[in-house]
Image (cartoon, rainbow, N blue to C red; front, side, top):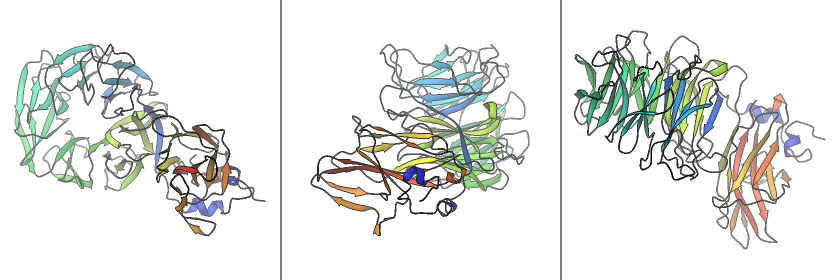
Length: 507
């Protein structure tokens, strides 16, 4: 009799493989999920996590807090407009404040920036772009401090450009970077022409920031007294934090097409490091503890789920990567770095995935990822394949991750109403079953369905959309893969199948 831990999941009499061989074939895991939060709009349009920024300590507990945007959020009542920005605790991820604009304002939070304490209450504030305006929002209570009627293409924290010891504000509009006073909104400077991207980096003093703009000819760094340096090429520029140890912040400059990105010195624009590119990028925090600040790149269009990758600031090597759970999840739409998250005190990459399923609808998520410690491995649950065209019923991941000692729950959903399944197929392979190659076409009267997984065990759930798999608390299960698929018999010989999912077990 087979008494291995995995056999207790897929059935003791049918489990045909040796567990150690199954787990040994898997690649090592390098990232650890510390926290995941989800959007809560009533319509499943996604959007939460589309923008994220580390604001600073808004609640006075000593931890830097985070602003995350949900520009497509629609509230339960019609008393306010679309979009929402949440301030999350850097200690435990709890919601500290939320900003929801007044009626008639849409897209609040499509862009965010952290200018610092603008209103002088010793609490850092948040700059929020809507579809038609820029709002300055109090970090203390999420009240609206000021509104600027300008539709912008980018937001940045400018630092103090008029030397009045109040942080100023900057945005990209009409191909020009406009810098305005944080005190009264008066114009201070206009930079560049045909600008398509802008980043703010630390300057030589605590108040000063350089603004690096991308124009048709390349990148130009500006300070209040004039141009600092210019380099040719590149398509987009992002803040990289401090990577080379001098007093000037650095930038991540993405090449045309996004295939590569150079980390450039903020001092003179020279190339410090080259890594693969993406649609979002950030840097400035030491993720692996080697004394060098690192960089992260988001690739939401990477097929099929999107992903984020973190690279060493010392040599450009890959530290870790994480893909989304589902196709179209948009993992990596926004990225930021936090120097020490909560009770773990680990440095993390904040990753927005604006189309994550939250258990009931597509809403979006914000995930905090850290460099995994020795022996740590996260689980995953990734759907693949297609359901029968008669039902179009899809497996949707649960909110958490499959780990040993837990009951991992997931859902069958046909995107309109829940659909129950009479059988849950559990298998150990997605390539062969009983001498037959997978996937295997199943011809029925209703439609042509596909078997994607080896039918090593049939579990009989009670006609519910929500299914659960009990995972024993056994270390030898860590890294093992199980494949699942739903099968519904609607009276012989009519069969319906869902798509399938690959479940990897973590600890």
